[in-house]
Amino acid sequence: MSTLDAAFAALSDPTRRAILSRLATGEATVMELAEPFAMSQPAISRHLKVLEGAGLITRRVEGAKRPCRLAPQAIKEIDRWLDWLRKAMEANYDRLDAVLAELEQNEGKEDQ
Amino acid sequence: MSTLDAAFAALSDPTRRAILSRLATGEATVMELAEPFAMSQPAISRHLKVLEGAGLITRRVEGAKRPCRLAPQAIKEIDRWLDWLRKAMEANYDRLDAVLAELEQNEGKEDQ
DNA sequence: CACTCCTATAACTTCAATGTTATATAACAC
DNA sequence: GTGTTATATAACATTGAAGTTATAGGAGTG
Image (cartoon, rainbow over all chains, first blue to last red; front, side, top):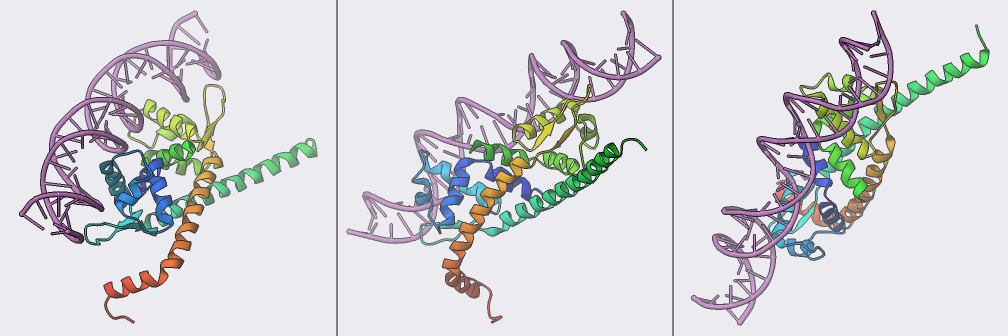
C-alpha cells in the first residue's frame, strides 16, 4: 500500500534520480555512486537505503563492497498507477468531448 | 528539473493521489474533494496548492468556487523521465542478461 | 443590509527528511 | 598483528512538510 508512497518519495529527490541514472548504465558501488556528488558518503548511503526501501535498487555483497543495481519492481508499480490514471483521464476527456460536441450541435441547430 | 521534484513529491502523498483519482472522474470543487477525507478543509487546500504547483491540476474561478481538474502536463514529464530510465534499464539488462540469468539460476535450484 | 457558504491564509505544533561529523565494522593488504 | 579501504550507523542540527484551529474575505441569498 505504501509502496507507491515510498517509490514516489524516493524519486522526488534529484540526487536519488541521478543515482538511478548512473545505475542505468550498470552496477556501481557506494563510493562510485558518491563520487560525482558534493556530499558525504553517509549521505549517499542513506539515499541508497531509501532507494532500496522503495524497491528501486537491490544490492549484493562482494567482499567489503555492496554493488547496487536497478530493480524494475517499483518502476512497474508506478507505471501501473500512472497508466490507470492516464486512462481515467482519457475516459474523462472522451466524455467531455461528447458533451462539447453535443453542445456545439445544439448551438448550431439554432433553437429546437 | 525541479518540475520532476515537485511532481514526484506531490504524488508521494496518498491523500493527493486519492484527490487525483477523484479528479480523474471529472471536475470537483474544494469541498467536494475534501468530503471523503477525515481532514480539515485547510489541509485539503494545501494539498491542492501542492498539486497545482506541481502542474498536476488546474483551477478555474466560478463564483466563490474553484473547481479543479487534472492537467496532463506533469504526468507527461514524469512519463518522459520514466521512459528514459526504463529504456536505459532495458539496454543495461540486455547487456547483463547472461550474467543475471546465471545468478538467478544459481539462486533458484534446478527447474531447468 | 445581514448572513451563510466556499476557499484561502496565518499562526502554531509536530514529525520526518536531509545533511553533517565521528565512529564502528568488516574485508583486504602488508 | 597494523593499516587501509568500503560501508554502515550513531548523534546531532536544520529544515520543511503536514496537520490543527482561528480567521479573513469574496460571492451568493434572503
